[in-house]
Image (cartoon, rainbow, N blue to C red; front, side, top):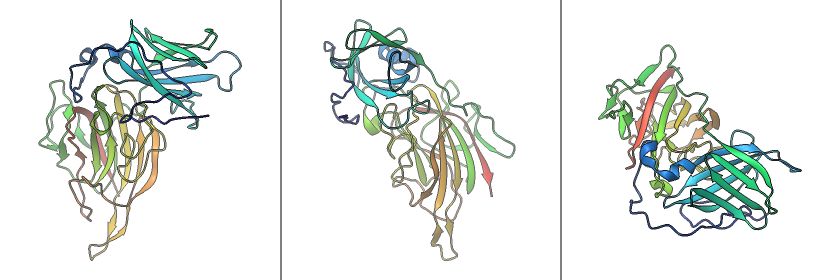
Length: 336
């Protein structure tokens, strides 16, 4: 079956599940880097964006369908359909379909003359076949990470608990008690377990690396990317990726304005007495409670890392890439 993989930076083409454009909306005057940090400021499009899932009726190879709907500004949308269920909830990582659509009259319509249509309204996505028979009604779901609100264990260094930014160089706390992007921990670590919770801003007009971008650098050296990658392919420069080293095994990105989690097991690189590296560092990463990197080798420091590779311990660095990102419940458990 013909497929065209989805990419933010290119115009979305027709696929086997295509979206038919509705009448063009007036040009949005908001700039590409416009961002919302709460649902009130996000506007109407945000109400349609998200994940939908439900059972298929009739004689189908799969009995369940997952759908991700991504807001692209100006009433435009992209969508990705997953036979079997959403990523991490039934999808077998083989086939998926994507396309583009538009909001008109309070409804987002997804349609293809050969396969049928999907209409999204009031938290429901009604799927019909080409004979206009309803074969599924998908409900909007809001998934939460299994490690959300995870408490720091005994011996952990609590870097941020909402009280202040005392553990951070130049750290700033928002009015609602959240740590802002662009800061480095005063504490330094060698081998450790990390728990980090973050919220991506809603930036529907932005694309690629300009869409809610930050990064979490282990020892200030190795970056696990932070980016609005909801509905994307899952590359090393997207959420769950170890930048320039390895793609995530699965794109487990939730929609922006959701609280998401990184849990990391980090083992530092080793160096000889002459200062030369004798073995690379290693890292296992869970995104939203799902393992997306398993014991990968860190062959080099990230290009933009604030600290070069070396034998000394390093800090946790939360990158400022010009987009507003919020953090909470950050703790590190040192280990031998």
